[in-house]
Image (cartoon, rainbow over all chains, first blue to last red; front, side, top):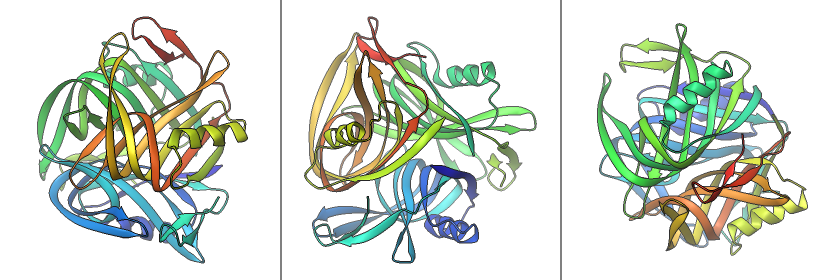
Length: 135
Length: 135
Length: 135
């Protein structure tokens, strides 16, 4: 179950994943669901899985762009936290979503993170070439 | 933590934000996370933050369009509730997301709203020109 | 309220809705909120509501495409489970979202499903021509 729900803001100019990682570190969070993120970014890099195992293309987008939504999780692989987030971005003229590689916050990023009372874990999967969630 | 989860429907022809505001008022909800909204709209106005502080462009979309997803929160600024929602809309030929300014429901909007056991609050931020979440 | 949160993975080559239905059946879940799904698909069919009552167009997309996000619910109509999910997909060149009719998982689909402690129900609505959520 969820044991605590955190709603917090990442501020302008901060890198979004780093901001979330810092929050998790400060609050000792190693197992959580990213329920949502809304706000805006001044730029972002999204990754798109093209082939298996694990071949990604990355594309840089320059905004400002709205963060329409985001979802993901915080899990451990061995003892290292992995924050895995997909995000949907949009402006008036373009709309793209994908694996969040990095993003610089424009006005704000309002993050809802729900801590779990059990440990999510990842393990390398040779078929996908990625660190996949363990059941 | 979440203290209660509400799953409810906004019906055809209703304005989505007004429908959610009415539900919150009826159930005395002033602090909540919008976990999701799916359904369809016959029209919508989305806003896109263009410059800081607080300069938005708004664009009207005419559907029907699917509500692919939505996220946000209900918080108080002073004693006034602020419902802040970003939404992702899509048809076969266009796909856009952004700050939900208004939307008229087409078939349905299925809303999941999770009430918090602490009060979310907003405060005016002179840098962004917007009412930002307080930590 | 939520009574249990399930985070699980649907594996490559599996049909996403079938995978979720199988998980729900195995764990006796008949009332839940789909909080999120991220991952990638090799192909998907999305439906778009065009007219009321209940006239949909369906479009097939060939990927790989990222699952940027997804939301929905598990409910009962009479005694039959209905899994209703909207999904947002994106590649580098196209981005579309809508009602998930089917999708074949490419690398993974990481699903967060929160079971409810009360029963969500659907009923046929003659105005929309669809099985709508009951309040």
